[in-house]
Length: 319
Image 1 (cartoon, rainbow, N blue to C red):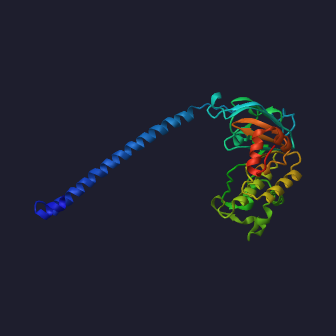
Image 2 (cartoon, one colour; image 1 turned 90 degrees about the horizontal axis):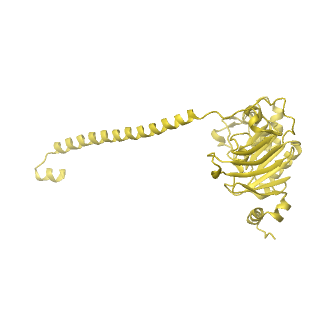
Image 3 (tube, rainbow, N blue to C red; image 1 turned 180 degrees about the vertical axis):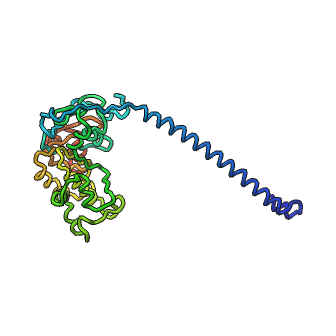
């Protein structure tokens, strides 16, 4: 419109420029006001949330058990355990879980995505407290342990492997600050990590990039396993931590664990049925419930959920 006005001689160019400048200033001010309003709404919601966090009462209680633990070290008992993230029974993601893992056993946990496998093992170090039932470690309710004492017994290799900036040696030693070089190398050999670490130009002093960008997924998993093993735990939890490792390497890791881990209780969460077939027993989870418990052969005969997993992965018809 300004162009038509200038062309007709009814408007000057200066009028158009002045109009545009004034409108720009007005629109900028309006945008700043809207941004302040949005920030105020976010700050108000954040203030409420901070108040909720401060209002939460500490529910982590314990008694000194240093002289009371007389049960079998490494034993885990789930007794009618129910768990809900909201605390409401109707929202339970684990329902009436009951089983016993004895010291020295290697137990596989398998189930579909969302069946509660990771949630189950997160209850053992008391990352969450059970909503109902009782969870015992060494024959004692975990709620009676000091969290530090309980977690000193346990080593976990999570699904997402996290490596810190620093050398390979420092990353493994993070599991046990007092570990010497011999212990670090032994843990790396058990985790099938020693060969590729030694092949690096600087060996165990090789620097790890941010989040381990200079290592493959399988290599990061093996370094994380070595970090857990160097702790010399009573309970080892591998949460799908060999998913990026080839089957042959995984078999060597498990064979080394069996030889090294006499008396070590090992929980192996896996998506691949081949990863748990040779464990002492297998727990099959389905929608937060134990659908089957037994050896590979027993579950093939009796557990429908395990049969379906076997058929879908192995590709053979199960009778």
